[in-house]
Length: 395
Image: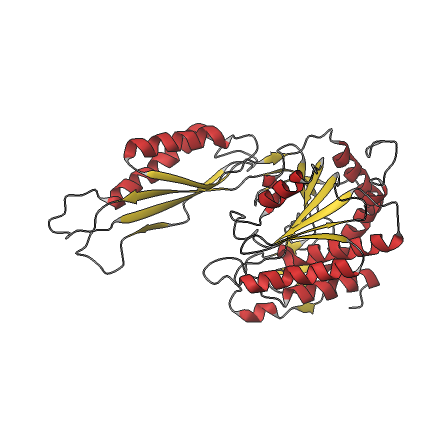
């Protein structure tokens, strides 16, 4: 199917990104390829006259992109160029178009929308000043959880050290989850994602005479205690489905097939995806108190609360108006269950707004191509409201 020139340009860049196996997750991360994908984007943006800052202080890099003179933007768009491992194999890094869909690992999550953003910034730079107060942060470890540099929290800390503090954040993850509609909603509420684990320690001993603690029993007790405390602190069930989710992604004690030696270490993972109405602080404090009493060690790798935009935020209101102008229809609102980088933004300043895709992390991952151009057009309408002026953006 022939696409309009803008969509075709986005598809070319998206496919170039998909061909790079930029896997950041276990069991087989490819950090060199993550950096390669970041460099492709940096080179593209540099070539089109954007101002870029390359942060490479860890296993994966991050990239800031700004318009000239707008290095401290009021609006910051958040995205990532890393992916999870392919399913079933590296053939998923061979993108192809079938009808209205672009197939490939990262097509929906989220290389196509990153390509859209990059192409729009290049086109807007070519139009010349005045430029909008708009920038982008693209990272390489979102799928890993951003717990090591350079993830969103580390990059935002760098921006603040330069004197920048955006008033509004947009995470560009897909917000039309069926992969059948051209318009992504504005998700005003988004769940956080916290990762913790209990650690139990014992002594390797002959199982026939050992008198030490049973690490399995300790961690099973911790599993039940976590569920009990979650019921006390969180909204776990709601009629509309908007609730906090608690899961236990791993439980490891001992070695398979080794019966006559007791384990000296065990771990139980806890993942909490909390709605902004539920505060993680008291729950984590309760888990720490329990761990101390039970002789366990609690490690909080990452603790983030959910995000809910202040509806009076003028930059959010301006985006609503821009979407309505570009699409000829009111902007639909939603609440985002999968966590995104927006959880690292100030709790009342961020939304998730993206395009349409299906099957992130699945073998049938694909992006709905007709959602590309409406997103581009809405960005263009939004930019007109962000150029320097005497009136507030929502006016």
